[in-house]
Length: 264
View (tube, rainbow, N blue to C red):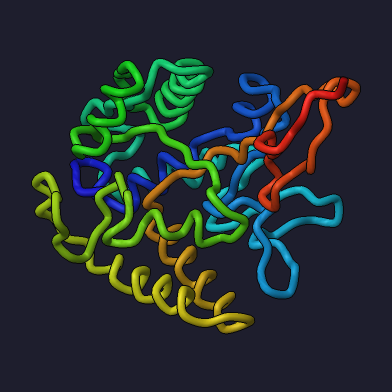
């Protein structure tokens, strides 16, 4: 958030809109992942039982925050980059993308590199690190753009939204106030204060008012394009029920093996 050139909202929007998320899920992952248009996954519900996401009649995620989850918006991306002062990528500094050496991340990073170079005309340098080193680098803020992900700890949108408060993990370094252990995070982001306040309100109330506070928080996060959400991952397990017996899924959809027993 605080490093040139991604400290410009127009640059962040250009990078996000240039991504073909459907290509990533359909051609690279091929595991049931769903292209994303916002941060909170569609499985998280509001107090009325409705999804946090806009869904069409077939249950597919719809466009939000200018992000079409099913295709890149190349012309819009180019316009935002031009608005930032880099028409057709002219004068844009080499962009470094940090990722970890796990799973499909190298393939995704290479896809992002190709999309950004083709659509925006910019040069993208890939930097891969071993997982533990990658986590430390990202936490220290020593990156320009970094990949990341999060798995829910409990069945509520707050398990996601709490990440980007000024005292949360918030590796994007999007904070309006200094915090203990800031590791040199000296650039403050005033718009994060309204996000903090919305999350704090949501943690103290319930019902429709809480829904409004959570929606407000996510709107602030996405309108500032602090992140460029790519996809929502599924949980995958292969279970032989002739061999085991147990209580099934926990509320967030994961299988609970803690109390499973082997069938004799």
